Amino acid sequence: ISRARQCQPEVMQAANTMAENQDQQQALQQQQQQQQQQHRPQQPQQRQYKPREGGAEKPVEVNQSMPIPADRVGWIIGKQGVYIQGLSQRSGCAISVSDSPSKEFGREWNYIHLQGTTRNVDRAKKLIYMRLEQFRATPPWAGPHHQ
Image (cartoon, rainbow, N blue to C red; front, side):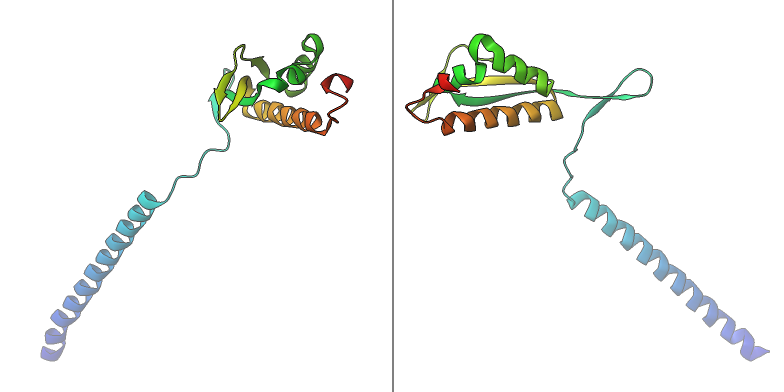
């Protein structure tokens, strides 16, 4: 009996030491997780939405501008604005062109202003790039009015 009573405090001390070690390990793990979260780069949001009445979400409107060479503005607009109106309808984006060119990098540039959802603005940019590629493909003797 006396031997059992002598072992009991040792067992209790060992159990307390193990519990303290577990607590320290848990605290260390929590600290490491917090540090990882603080140093982890945040991923950019793919889509931004604003809540709309009725619980559904509506895509956010964005405004972007893109430069085009001033000598190609007429090509982008088209006769009587036909091409740019079609581009607006196809992309679902509001489109306007700056009236006055700015000179940068030895060239004159006009800016096309696009307003719509991220997807619609992206569609409009693609259509504009495709239109500019057609301008480059036009033979010099044909001029922009022959396509």
